[in-house]
Image 1 (cartoon, rainbow, N blue to C red):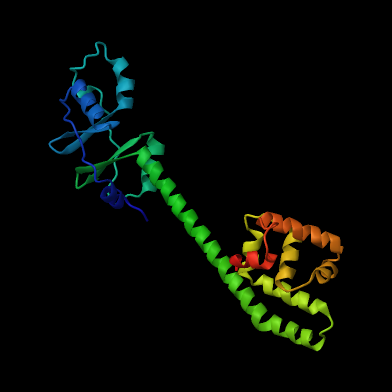
Image 2 (cartoon, helix red, strand yellow):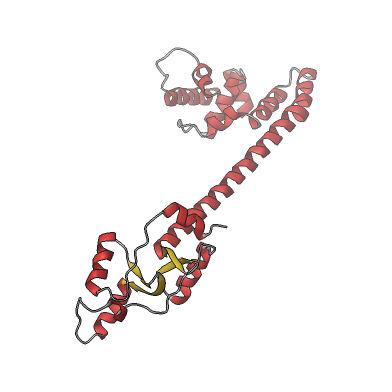
Length: 260
């Protein structure tokens, strides 16, 4: 589990503190120069308070005569919520939510070694969720690949040999050729590329392309798909148009070979 030890190693930022005698002006100046939203208040290295932009907004109106020379001890929060390097980001979020604070000093042996903000926590938790999601998606993809391999193995080793044997036994029956081609497509990377290609082939066009790849002639394609010969020709014309080869020599298969 991600602890603040890792966070401290990655962040590697200097820790700025002020004494309780530092003036409001001095404290705000440091916060502005360092672009930070809070400053721990320490006395002889011991944490005794914290001053944040929220503290200034809340307490400035309660001071009768607001002066930038007033000590920060008049504005700081004295009861400081803190964490240690052993705490997790989830711990930090729970403390921040429960006590409605946005900054938590990190202490080790009563020494201030860092400070974590609500922004740090949210950013880390988003990154962690992205990592988990990526692992889940990778796992799903791995499962899909494993399933594809199993299907391909079973088709090639157990089903295709039977179909091929029947095709040889009944050479006049084109249905066995059709079945064999479809089984080949189940385990074919080429077919997947064909379906997802940039050419946006229609289902009928894909069926015709598959039969062309299997060396079917136009009449055989017409019979296999139960469509007219003129419809086959129209689809072939559309396919050549999508491939940009209407005015070029060569058959459709030649121009689709790059997808193998």
